[in-house]
Length: 169
View 1 (tube, one colour):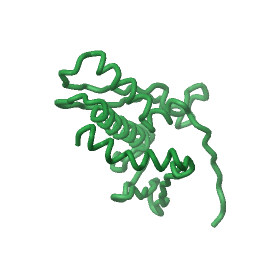
View 2 (cartoon, helix red, strand yellow; view 1 turned 60 degrees about the vertical axis):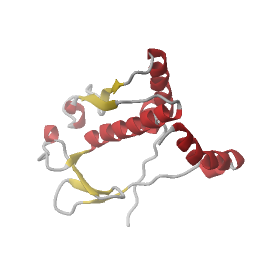
View 3 (cartoon, rainbow, N blue to C red; view 1 turned 90 degrees about the vertical axis):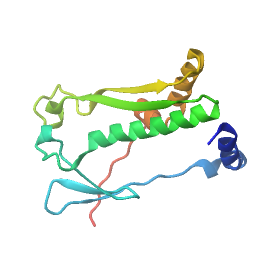
View 4 (cartoon, rainbow, N blue to C red; view 1 turned 180 degrees about the vertical axis):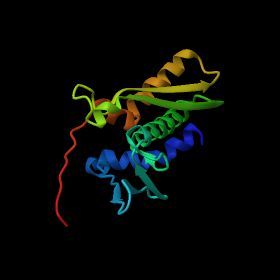
């Protein structure tokens, strides 16, 4: 797809959202079912069933998906798609590219071993390795716009309020 094709595809969507701002407000959902036999949660991904379990550093077998890994994978996926869309929109030819994310965790916090150890990622690093003949200023613009428009990156970075509740069924 080229920039003109992307603009043509998105133009009616953008117009609809300009005319009716509420049309742009979408609620995404994820659902999972607690595993009856194991410490695991079966997550419906829309394409397949993903089974998440404990990371080996907390006693998991390593056979199930780690939710921390899934978070980084979601970041890589979103950042990669965003970078590709932005590159297309601003006419930057990419010969190839790789996206990687890594994050630092202290599992002492997750296991309650050390009260001063944080629960969650202490730092996340997102990196793009790009092969392109575009001038550096265009690549700088590409990175800036990717950062601005990547939903998962902005969500992690901004830390929106999250509500939690429990109810009996």
